[in-house]
Amino acid sequence: MKIKELTPRMGNVELVAEIADAGEVREFNKFGKSGRVATARLKDETGEIELSLWNEQIDQFGKGDTVKVVNGYVKEYQGEMQLTTGMRGSIELVKKGEGQEKPAAAKEPEQTEIQKTIQKLAVDEERIDED
View 1 (tube, rainbow, N blue to C red):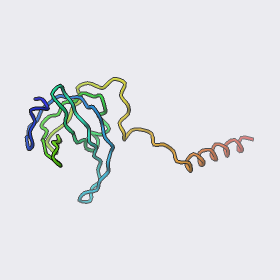
View 2: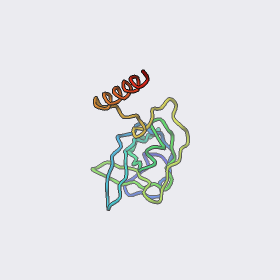
View 3: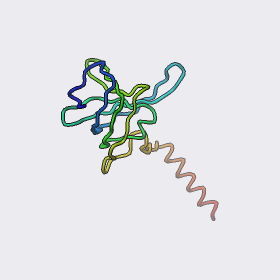
View 4: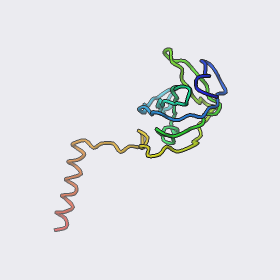
């Protein structure tokens, strides 16, 4: 199946496409359970569509990866179609992207000035202890 063939409320979607872009990870809390979601942009030779990545999927796939969506579902949100795996679908890695960056969730967070100061003080303290 190709992206241009998708229509809203279509189920049992199976397609292979490349992750053209991976969005920011958002955390949520629903019905007392917390989780993470990110929106990726899938593309093939016929078009593009947004893909919801949930929890562990965020860490498994990144920009440049070719993935296969199995038993996906197309929904429409604010006039734009989105593909999701829901509870019954899955995403499989077909080919790892070359030279890709770490997923947003896996990037090292930048240190704040306070964290840098604390780290410097700890290093200085170790030097004093050595003397």
